[in-house]
Length: 538
Image (tube, rainbow, N blue to C red; front, side, top):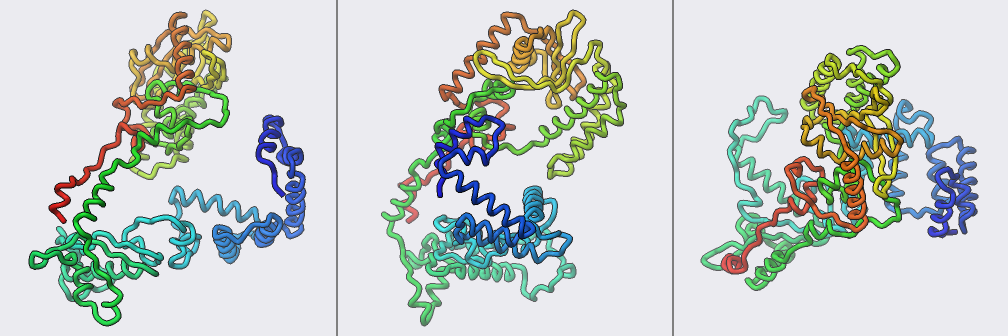
């Protein structure tokens, strides 16, 4: 049985946000059989006490899953898990296994717990399976060290010529004391040991090949004639005997072949700029902007495309995680102020430390510096007049979604105060580099906040950045003319996004951009060998 994907999408659209997947499936052609199969499998699993082994067998049988390589690996991994101690396996149910998988994946991402090879479904593959199972038709580029224990149908060993492979010996600045080694070294000198290790690596490289082995290197010179590359290849050709001599075919590429290879290499490859000019996603989504995305587009349209349209993920940077923890602590404090029970300094700092403790920052020195900085900033802020607003605190972290310039715009106010004249003040806390008066006056973000407040029936006569870094507040205002200009800017940005205008805009902020490694403005051409020079080399 098969469910028509077009009809299924139509049913999902008609169902709206609150829908039952089973109900939607039943209304789609072919969906009733799917639902019936799911219900039968669910009941069969309940009868088997939700065991993991029965769950895998029922799923394969009920849904006709073929014995693919990923499925076999999953079953092997599950069987090894069932053999673990009861403290890990629990009752051995499907739910226990899924919880273990969740923890397993999280620990693998954060590298918080060292897993042994037997716990790793990839490390448990037999030699050769890593190359042939998941990457049947792919070319893998790896070092000889990384290839240990693996086998491939065809292997190319590149740059097998002195001094590339074997590499030249470099004397250590400080020799490691022999008395501290866990295993005694041979009596030979360090250079000899280096040569022996390089030869062992070459043996490893050659024995990775199952069917075909190609050893490549730059031709040498012998009595003014072309000769096999100096080093291991020359040794192989010169000293081969018996069956080995018949199995080795040594070919010298003629100069014209080398020229053709270099000419092909000199052809311009697909550049980053061509890739980033690909069409934006066309999935029928209603365009919803935010104060941050509008500011991002204003700063660099390409960054907007990569982040919000293509949704390329960004790692949660340390400054971002630090800022989130500070904002949460300030929200807790001003919620208390609004309720007439402001928490003390120790409670606010404890809130920050608790939230920042969840941050994933590998560098402990960096974590310690941010922890110290957070304590100092919060302490200085709470002891300043800024922590005791003269006006009434109306709301904290208030979310909004309004229409501005014909576009849907969403965002969040850090804090809203009611002024004596009934109007409001919008406060935005900044944990990074302090914002200046000029930045506040030109800020599209603050203009969007003022427009959002107007759409919600308020008049924001005061807009302010509070810089935690230096404890200074920068206040600005927006006139009716300013708001009209900002509304027109939002309309213009929305039109440009709809038209697919995403040209990069280089600036001093490029060095901190998460996408700088795939930005065409940061791409640097690789040097290409000249044809004339290549002819002389060969």
